[in-house]
Image 1 (tube, rainbow, N blue to C red):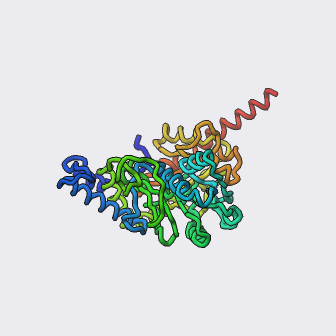
Image 2: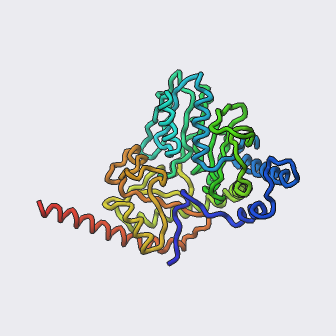
Image 3: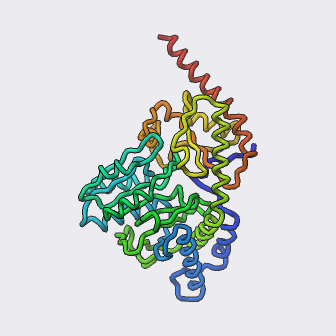
Length: 393
């Protein structure tokens, strides 16, 4: 059975061209970029080339790019480092109600240090409003963190408007861009961002390598100590092959973004139309237009989403997902969907399909053929169970 991979929001395969760029640094060129010999100098040039490639992708200067290991590390560095550096100005942080666990849990940890956290509400489509942001502002507000796009529902936040608001109020602005960078155009200058996170495994680069943009002149209190790497922001030996791979993935993403986006939006809308016509009672989640191009999310009423995902993989070879893989496994429903006003019963049927740049409509035939049958089967079992329960009373 051939597998159909519809979970690119959690991991993308490494592009063959990225692997080709990495190969010399996995084999022959092994000098440490900080060493002063020839191999070290060659490695340092490779690091700086990758830094420039990432900078061009997001519209920053190269010296504003800090390499890290994961998006989670970048989010921790940005939130904790900026909060600590701004502590003398205040102790109040504002987050959206759609933040990833690596932002939300970090903020909760900061609360234990005496910081105060406000969580903004979102509407039924997953959008944060400027009105709610204005209401949450205090004299002690030092940092606003709004995700670029939530990975569960795909809604793109109004970063430009929020960035202008932050600039006018002289408040630091950070965005978790992991789900979005490499998928949509991002310009940190235009968005008035002070910090932004990104990760290579979201746009066909290697896993275990990520980066953070930090605006020139923005001080970041360090989380770790032990070396002068990354301008003292992040000590530790460089992941040279990973950095080179991230740079190449960034370059390819920029070059191919228009064609990728067009293809993915068409694929997403084609899938939505087919499912809507063959399966009744689907609740589409997230904004219908202001969303990631490769992202489709919905709730199937009358079933448990995890049961459908299991059957899709076992009987159709379809690999998909629902909530955040970093979320609380003890929770039965997504906090993101509940924050959007979706009922707990409906949220239990959450499904998410995220497409790869190389997926074609022909690849989806097995999904369209099998999924209506599986949904009907699960709904019949659900209603039979209810009827049996009523009959025993």
